Length: 274
Length: 194
Image 1 (spheres, rainbow over the protein chains, first blue to last red):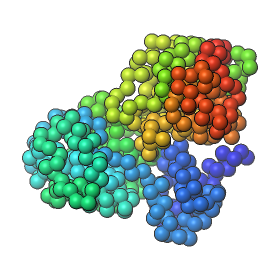
Image 2 (image 1 turned 45 degrees about the vertical axis):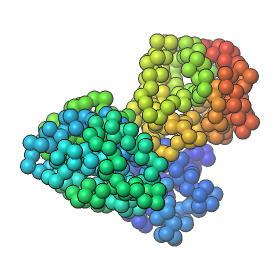
Image 3 (image 1 turned 90 degrees about the horizontal axis):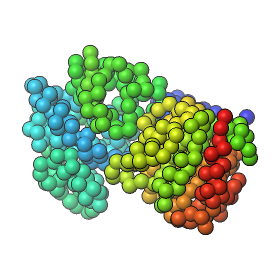
Image 4 (image 1 turned 30 degrees about the vertical axis):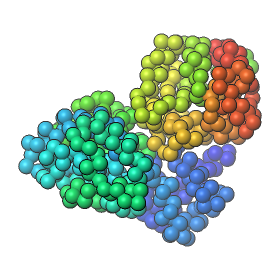
C-alpha cells in the first residue's frame, strides 16, 4: 500500500474516532482540504503520524478543542462579494417586505462577519425588527466570536469598501465603536439574531425560513454531504424561498439542482421552485 | 521522453505561474494539442479582490476549452481549468475538483502549493507538474510533494524566466525531472497526444 493510501486510511480512522468520541462528523468533508489541514495540525501539535494525532485527540479533550480550528475553516469577511449583498437588497428584500415577519438562516456562519453584514442590510431596509436571523455553526469558539461581533480594526477599511460596493447607505463606522484595536458592532444589530449550534452533517431542520445564506461552506463538503445540506435548505425554505451560495459554488452538480432556479446567476442566488 | 510516452505516463497536468505568467501561459496553452487526453489545471497568482478574465483571455489561444473552476466540477480530459481569484484550487479525487478559502499561502489565494499537493495525493506518479516564471517561492512545497509521490516536475529554466525566483526556489528546494526553456517546454507539451 502506498504512503498516500496509508495516510488516507489513517485519516479515515481518525475521523471515525473523532466522531465516536466527540460527535463531530467530518467523515464526509472534502478530503483534499482535510488532508492539508490535518497535516498542518500534525505539525502544530508535533505529531509525526496521523495515528499520533488521533491518540492525542482521543485522550486530550482540550487539544481537540484547539484542533477544531483545523477541522473547520474560519475565513470570513463582511460584505464578501459585494454584488451578492446588492442582489439581496434588490431582489430578496422586496419579497421579504411582503411578509409580516420573516426568518433567515445563515448556515455555517463561522465568526459572524456575514451575519452582521446581513443585519446592517436589514436595518437599512427597515426590516430588521420584523426579521429573525438564525446564525448557526458547529464550532463553539467561532459562534462565540460571531456573537461578540468584535473584529480587528485593521480589517475595517476593506469591509467599508465592500459595504459601499454592496449598496450601503451610511458609513460602516456608524455601526461600530472602537476600543483596543477592535471594532465592536452595535448591540442593537443582534437583537434579532439567534446564535445556535447546528451541524449540517448530523442535525435536522429546526424552522421554516425565507432565505438561507450558506456561502463557502459547501466547498468543504464532498458531494454526498453537499446533497444532505442542500436537502435541509430545501426542506427549511418556504415556497419560493431564496438560497444564496458562495460565488464559485453551484447547485448544478448536486442532487437538488432541479428543485431550484437561478435568480441572480452570477451572484449565486437561487429560488426554490416548489 | 517521446510523444506517446507522455500520454502513457500521465493522467493529469498541473501548472503554476506568477509574475510574467500570462505570456508564458499563453505560449504553453497555444501548444496543447486538441486531442490532449488529460485535464490541465492551472494556478496563476491573481489579485484577490476582483474578478479575473484570464480564462476568457486565454480561451482564444488554446485548442481546448479554458474555464474558471466551480466547486465540485467534474475533472474532464481535454479541458483547461483555472483557479478563481480568492480561492485555492484542489483535486478532490480523480473525477472531481474542489475549491477552498483556506488561509492564503505566502500571501496568495489562489496558491500553487495546494493545487500541486492535492494533485500529487490523487495522481501520484501519474502527474506532470510544470512550474513557470514567478517572483514568489510558492510552488516549492508543491513540487516537493509531486516528486515525493513519484510524479514528474518540469521547471522553467530560471535564466529563461521573466521572474526567476519561483523556478529557482523550487529547484533549490526540491529539484526537478527537467529544467527547460519555455520554448523547449512548449515543444514537449505539443507532443502530448494519446
